[in-house]
Image (cartoon, rainbow, N blue to C red; front, side):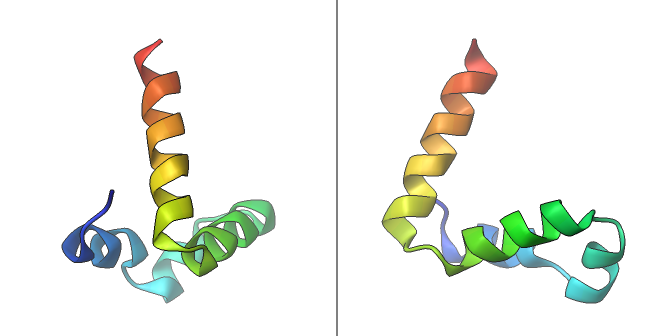
Length: 53
């Protein structure tokens, strides 16, 4: 799972970050941030598994 430092690094500066995102990407990022830590961990594990294929 992500530790607190990694969560802060992912969030970054919302103003500059959001200017580079499409509306769909921004919506997904917002949804991800609102998820429980367990759900975020599941998504991270799933993404890492796909990346390893």
